[in-house]
Image (cartoon, rainbow, N blue to C red; front, side):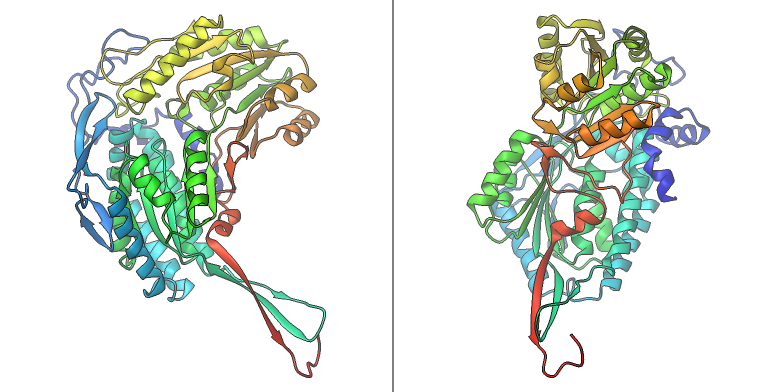
Length: 541
């Protein structure tokens, strides 16, 4: 699949989710009594009734250490759930500090003594490519497992995230044999060169909202640079990481190079962040947890840390906008992935000249949004990830109502089972309200009114976050003004959530440190060494 097609696949494939290709994929997923019934919108019927049973077996529930699946040292397990029902899918080995110690020891031995950093970069590239081919072969199974464990629509997982996952590993396989240093001119009779060396053992902690994609963002560049890894999955969504790790070993990855530990943040996560034999740490998650991770890294061995954290991204609709197109894109920017996206366009600023029309159409679009079993064809929104996130979103909705924002639609749970929430729209939102300041991480759209560019720039930047922003305008000068004025790591003009493998992603301010994806991500996993050698009677300098 071409890179340019992938770069906009997230938006276009979901907008065309009724295609015959989706129908064939979904029809193969399993049985559902009464599948012919129309899907309820804002219904009081249980959203999780008559569920499709995913035809996928769960074969990997243990930790992967030194190439072997093993139980936790403590013998403990923890349940992982189906967010459609809150019922247990499987029990997973619960790693803690001792499991992290064993995984780090395996990664250290693989780096110091094993073949991975010593094989040619071309050989490493071939293993990454073989792995990508194996993932493509198992993509339907992986998409079903991702939906089952996470609750995201199957069409999204199968048509957008699996292709992007595969593309990311093709991309990093291409980089593996193109990482090199420089020859540097110096004042004097010296030959100076720089070496770009793998940093060593990388600790990685990934979130639950995009388990496979975040795996690729972290693991791809680290392996391409020749490092070894200990990765902690999110306790909510461990299943697909364990599955693809098995595929990596089928592709020829040496034992100990990639180790996977499932467990909880205060135990396994803290042990990894503070481990004295981990050389590099990468974390994606909330800003509050990111602060803890950074402190633990600093208090241990001062390991460098890459952080991709929270956001409260503005989506600015200018006065010249095509309102229908702006409504659809703003809807996608916020409600994609049940609103569980760090860069979600959660502050929708609309120019006063088009505000009223936009508001009515945004409300109507939210009411039309199809909520239900994410395995069913045509469903746009599945459940939130778990009861904690479900209750958190509902608390923010109550806070919005209490602060006198106008609840235009939604505002409550959907159905009576599982973690489904009605698509919710607030208007008359003020910048000092809690729903305007905090990252809700759910299907809650807040709509603001503005008068001119100076005002919206000031208000859009008045946040502790700076992950992303969206701008909708036909005017090139307006787009250029906003692009340079907005304090955010990514600015999308007349598009949103474009995640090409080559495009760097990361935030300003409290949205993180460093960049993921693209050439910039390689710097996270490399050390630069300067080598200086005297020259004797050099023919030239």
